[in-house]
Length: 179
Image (cartoon, rainbow, N blue to C red; front, side, top):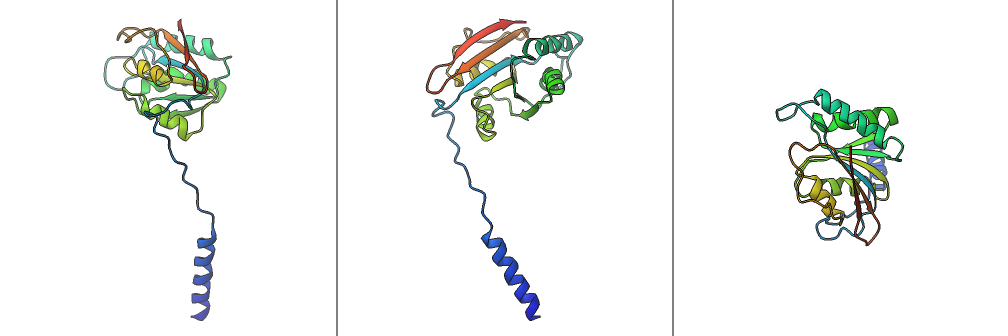
């Protein structure tokens, strides 16, 4: 019995001596986005079938292929997309061909969850593909301190690629390409 108690005491001592993971404080992104840096390729998911969480149409698959051809040599190192099938399928060609990791973020009309995930995964200063939605692209660009050049994206418009270059403590430059 003495040995059991001694063993338990030693085990507790060892566990207490282990280094505890340090919590990294999160900067509230709504208050200060000057730390945001990188090149962000932001697109809306490609054409989809009607419904809440549906797959891409034939035209959508063709557009996703065109997106792949457009960005495959751009140095993108990670993909961020929402959990919807249409978003995941839009990025599939690049993800599979380049072997890139994908981070799922929640679509919101503020873009805050995306910025939180970028910070959490320490993806600042990198080239990132972001697959978003018609009602989330403009807020995302504005969170990077960029000027999107439009107030909204029509429901039937799937052909914009926004390239947002963000430097530390500076407004972002935004280029828009049609594809």
